[in-house]
Length: 445
Ligand SMILES: *Cc1c(COP(=O)(O)O)cnc(C)c1O
Image 1 (cartoon, rainbow, N blue to C red):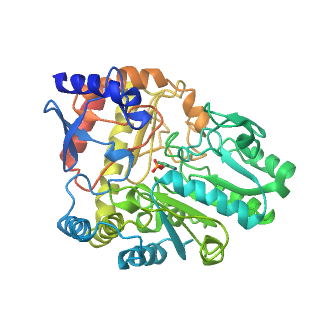
Image 2: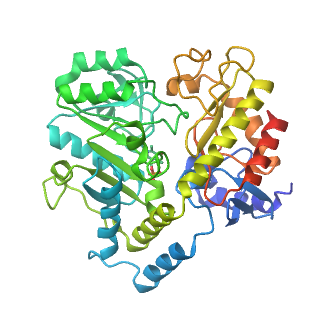
């Protein structure tokens, strides 16, 4: 594979963009390949190399790179008519109605421009609504580039994970390991009166993929309710990906107070959203007192792309297709892993998947969950499969990133650049793409 164009573009980029990129995960070793264009479920780089694309923009692209006619038409119409006004438009109302119709916890939505903005606003809203300052997040959980959640440490002993954030931000952030019932009980016992909200992804997609153990979310739901705190599900990845239009909360049967969205809900354009019961969401200005505003919020092009993407998904069995391919890929991977790397764990659900390079596990094929780890207690691997973000961090992350990712790229398969982030199947992927991927895993693992 020739990468001369990408190399020379990276050379230029290093002079004018910090690290040569605009989002840190994109800086793959030794240098990233630059994308020229997308083609269905594939991307083509600046040197003309073609890859099966399982990155899908890190999640936003449910349909792949060739937007269906109705999505393209809506995007072009709104781009050419405006593109934006600083006054409301019908399409924002339609997308909010669509979300409220399908997502169990949502009556009202405030649209913003990124997942980060959504989680920042959700935390502010929860603090204002409860009159409390503390929030609880999962160790290693990711909620975007926001001051309150960029923390390290455990329990109340947390500090900022990045320079430039005053220690005082972390003072109000408590962490617990995901899936650890004892830890969350302990935190509520000690700080229950001061906790505004627990915020978590329903299924960890940025440090995993990690599925909740039986009853974990019910525990979070009960504890928050008992202590007058809110439960925030960050569904920026899982929203309109897991569980189809009802999102992960519908599939798991747990109703949070506030839900944050991003990624798919903007159909490939910059977006975020905060949804929930009217009684909570109406605390945002101008209905209430909690300041929230944005020049580009509810951008007509984004709203149109999101709405038509979701309508298309609803009308064309998109979730059936991507989930079936996901099941096929994960069960194929499970067989390969059982044969070639029995320590490793295949994870994922619906159209999300990953192989985690766990260091220990029982030998042989017995007990592997059939198509991705679901934290079944009866499984012989139950004690070995990652239960939380820190478990994933302790796996062979360098091997994954420096050897495995590179070899998969050379085999024409584009995966997310590190051990931690989820990979995605899109509507444009075919059985043949799944075969190609499985052949590559077989050769590389
Ligand atoms: C991607 C992501 C974010 C941040 O969204 P941006 O649009 O990148 O700001 C927040 N939370 C989760 C769970 C995410 O996956």
